[in-house]
Image 1 (cartoon, rainbow, N blue to C red):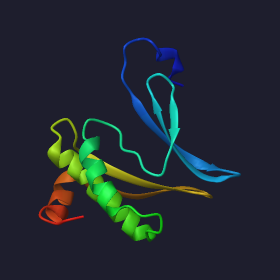
Image 2: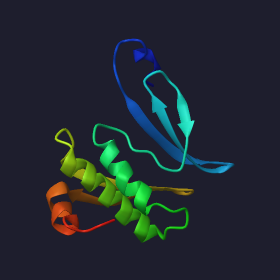
Image 3: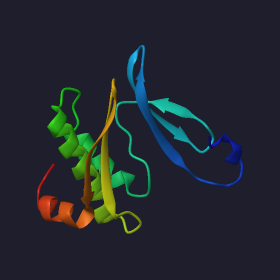
Image 4: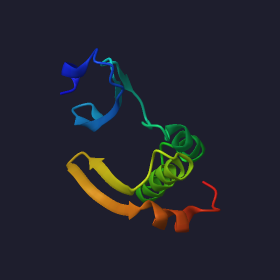
Length: 119
């Protein structure tokens, strides 16, 4: 899909997730086509802020609602601290039987919810 743009000076980072016969998978794919498997990734100019939240709050055994809250909080911090991030936060959950849209939040609403709180 993006291989045709390789070598054109574009910078991109993509996360790909899904399920196969081995179970769930999450991958980061960079501009050169390198693929890295992992449990958590953040992509974009605000990712350093999101990683700070995820590093403090992530554990493998999070309840689903806790994981949703962590995702919203991480994206909120990225948008709050990075001038190039912002807008709507669309949260999806990829499951074995497909995906669901969990929520769509305005960053301003998340600011009201998370400002002053700790992860």
